Length: 148
Image 1 (cartoon, helix red, strand yellow):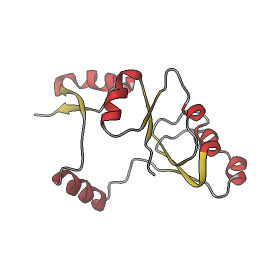
Image 2 (spheres, helix red, strand yellow):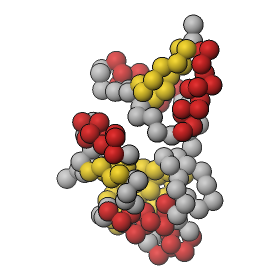
Image 3 (cartoon, one colour):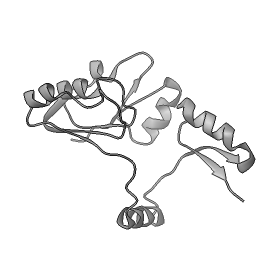
Image 4 (tube, one colour):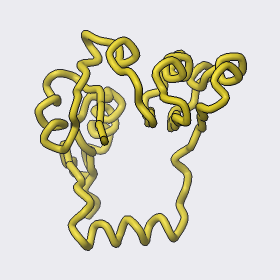
């Protein structure tokens, strides 16, 4: 069985359910590690302190933590990792600009299988406003800048 669990603010919960989330956790009122149990994969884009330590407690044997966030205490410590040798973790930066990945994205988009949600579009003259909104971290979807 497949179960998709995600975190967001309450205002975005219905939108995430409409995209296929089975369980939505309001990060303002709950910690995901107190609510979620028995998952195979945790995909982290936030990098909260001790994410790896919490993940190792709830991942199934053979489970995998992937984080895009870089920080000194995002991945599990060596002792935690050693205590669960069947669980893996990996930091994976966002610098993969491979032609193959771009071709795959193009194929998905051309077949209508890639849904991009644009939260807001700014004119180039307001690029600073776009950056401020992006850094605030609460946009649902992507923030785009129209370049003439």
